[in-house]
Amino acid sequence: MGAGPLRIVHVLRAPVGGLFRHVRDLAGEQVARGHQVGLIVDSLTGGGRAVEQLAALAPGLALGVLRLPMHRPPHIADLGALLAVTRRLAALEPDVVHGHGSKGGLFARLAPSSGVRAYTPHGGSLNYNPGSMEHRVFMLAEQILARRTDVLLFESAFIAGRYETFVGKPRGLARIVRNGIAPEEFEPVALNDDAAELLYVGEFRFAKGLDTLIEALGLLKQTAQLTPRLILVGDGPEKHALGPRAEAAGVGAQLAIKPPMSAREAFAQGRILVVPSRFESLPYIVLEAVGAHKPIVATRVGGMAEIFGPYADRLIPSGQAETLCAALKDALEEHPVLQSARAAQLAAQASTRFSLQGMVDGIMAGYLAAMAARHRA
Image 1: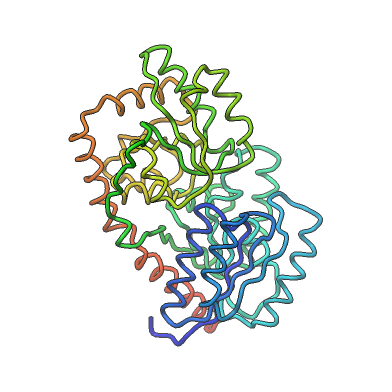
Image 2: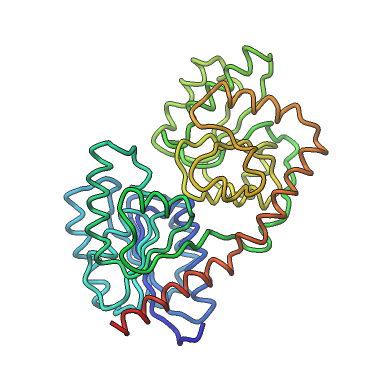
């Protein structure tokens, strides 16, 4: 990259989901390239799995890991967290402070630091319902924080577009650097002998559209007399509502809930991945499923069309149980040979556009461009 080792601190809230996957991969690659890296991350979420993953990263992180309470919505405790982040950055003196997501971006850009400030939204507050009071407040905050941002690193063209629409044209450097996965993740995953017909992997919350999926499953039973099993892998605030919702739809016996696990382990649990999301940015779970040659039924939200590329016509509208029901029926009845061929097509086109190396190269180039711009100024 034409520069010596950098001191890089990543600031994020929850050590779960695609955002953490992005930071984990990015930090790991930066360490492998000789940079000194540290993390500042929430201590309230993630549970034992987060502890394990952070412990695995820790030996390579020369700048260490700081965990402190970070609440998802605005909270009085944010003041104490900001003070702790400020102290940490003052002690570490990083060249780059990279904020991820709304709360990570807030702390990374508000805390005084001599390093350049990079920000990757990962959807975050940009996905709030436009026109709502929350959305207006958060977009005003983004406009203020834009003055303290040296480089915006959007993970999808979709999020870059939303930023320009709701926040405004970026004041300084801005680049689209799409998420990427490792070469070994572009290999098929074999199914378990007892694999279910349908699979969902992710968080259990409203934005993910699980209510629509359960309603569609009920319609599938009523209109087509099809009763596929559905395995839900994950956790989240809607977990305890899923069972009663499924019982009300008459599909309780078809549903099984399993705790979070690695994506490729989860992919062995079900034949067809269902992604009924209402909101997304550029979801890792879909990239990973494409790489694993999984048949996918997904909604056309966020950067999903960027992943599917020339096959974006396979995507369906979100929030429509009848449309999802029809798509599930088609997928369940599709000939396995044709289904495998379509999945292989999707994997082949994605492998050239969503690589881990390309993602890290693009982010590092963004850092260096921001450092050069600050030097000139």
